[in-house]
Length: 346
Image (cartoon, rainbow, N blue to C red):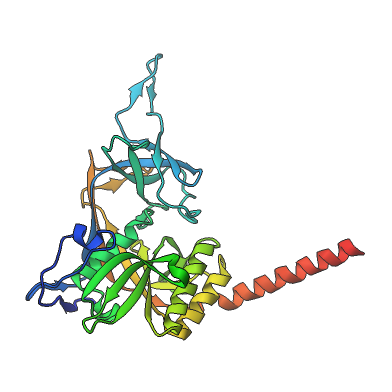
């Protein structure tokens, strides 16, 4: 699928986002003569409203982060200007966020909730890990909403095939103990099981000027289990798809991360060999044109901000990226452990 490609959405009524995402009962219908065009600016798959800018002080305890919001400076008792105290916010990412926490006081964006039962009013949504770099979405669960919207608009048809209806969070796998993110119904009544993974880690792609997105950013038993479930579904005659949502606009490639989780990388390769389809979505978080980040990392734009996430096309996939070097490193570590055990035993 190239940029500028138009997709026919079909001949039935398209429901709202809420209907698409409704637990166990959402269905996607198609609208007459409705088209979605993938242009250079991409297609909106998520919109943020009333985002509050700040700076990331630290992330800790997996689900928490301290954010210094850019409120007007107050003055201490001696009359000196003082920065506002950091605010504890919810961090909706269970991983280590590798590569996203290295910049001191990194620019950050948080959403707000008015829910009375919420312990923390703010949720960390995105960070800018380096000066001038792309914004990176850190809200893992939003990847599912982005895929749901892309399916609703029909822009993934070339990658995942024709879709008649979508059901989220469907029990499947051995004993029905697992849940797949989406079950797709084909126009002919066939089913496809679709798993979604959020991707934030990236690095330079070899000697090129491109960047490659990598998943996972640490050993993930859960991700390993999910890809094994998809493989078993294909081996039993079903159709399975794994969609990797790259929540940053600076990557054109995707690969399993052999360095962080070689077992997952091996399992994904085996899944592809078995017939599991891999799709990587390039998504870009775009800020309003009048929003800038100053040299100190403060977001200048005034008041709550709006932002959009746009799907800009599929990423190319390299399943063998760094496979050899990672395997050599694992072998070297194994030999070193063997020598150490031998030395201790003697």
